[in-house]
Amino acid sequence: MRKRVAFTAGILLAPAVAFAETPSVDESVALFYEAFDMLWLILCAALVFFMQAGFAMVETGLTRAKNAANIIMKNLMDFSAGALMYFAVGWALMYGDSVGGLFGTGQYLLSGADEVVLRDWMFQVVFAATAATIVSGAMAERTKYTGYLVYSIFITGLIYPVSGHWIWADEGWLAALGFHDFAGSTVVHSVGAWAALAGAFVLGARRGKYVKKNGTTTVNAIQGHSIPLAALGVFILWFGWYGFNAGSTLSGTDPDIAHVAVTTTLAASAGAVGAMFTSWKWFGKSDPSMALNGALAGLVGITAGTWVIGPGASVVVGLLAGVIVVASVELFDKILHIDDPVGAISVHGVCGIWGTLAVGLFANGVNDPGVVGLFYGGGVSQLGVQLIGVIAVLVWTLGTSFVLFATLKAAGNLRVDATEELTGLDLSEHATESYGGFQIFSNV
Image 1 (cartoon, one colour):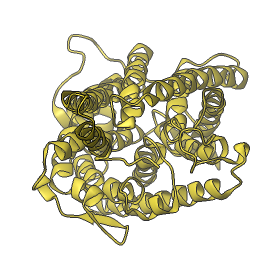
Image 2 (spheres, rainbow, N blue to C red):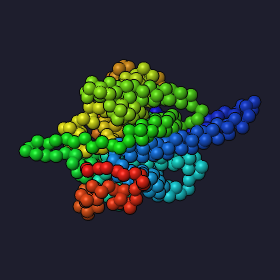
Image 3 (cartoon, one colour):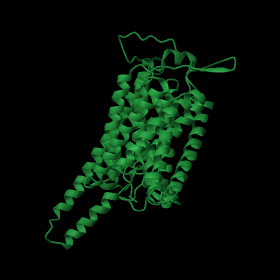
């Protein structure tokens, strides 16, 4: 099982020792490996950071023009406020000295950190910000900005680091069971999605989304204002995902980078195709927003198993993720009546579950002989461990997020009033317009 942090420091010492015992090999080669790994992780951290722009564009494009600046501000503060909290306490809770495998302690404010820890913090903080920003889309167009800031601080400072410790810290209790999540289908994406589900449930739907009359609920589509912006966001996210997944090899000299990049590409491509054909069959036309979300679904689906699942199986994982995301979006919207403007719960939560469980089905044991799925002769043991992890993270995140959002609601700091929602959050929350000089028509 790969270590999540300080992995390269370990493998770099080995060449150094070997070179000391083999005078014919110049010690400078070891320094090259060390420097290259440093560059690799910082570069990949920058790629994952760029995903914030992708999330911002997807959410902006799939919501109304009158809320675009509010979406941008939330994505900006997800990272900015979140990075400060992860620096203060989040890193310590996630990677500090383990307390019973439940949470870490020590290294608050990165005290005593050397260059390797600083490098690892930089790579990890962008993952924390990704988990936080997933919630923005699901709660878009009706959330108070001040309440959202409180949430951002709590997820990066408490909710995400604790469950992350269970899985990615060496002493975490799920890690000890053998739970495998290479780059974060559950650790990152499901955490963000379950927080989004709790938030959307407590917050309630946008005005006019679900209209009840004579005991019947009519579901009204509220169209986003720019599919091109949403598409740009998806391409940015796909691009950044190579830092997300391939970067999780934690070494720029690891040949498995190629394997991870290939499975990531194939799953995303299959997800887009699967969602396109599913929407075509379901709605009679191929839906661009569903196809775009299908690509993201494939990416989320392969993230847990990208290192242990082969290229052929990655196509299956991505294709099924594309089918699942369309069905899930329809389930939450048309049956459960939970208003998620961008489909974040389905993409990151439901497909996060699928991707995590897929490890227990499709892991082939080649890169990690300790992780073998059902379809490759490993029995149901790995699948069972994956299921335990999925349930544990779901219960922790839903529970803590529900308490947080219910508290904000009780304090009157969660939802804007009807007038502010109709006016748009750009004006009511930020006193600005995203499209100055353009007349925006909206009666919802």
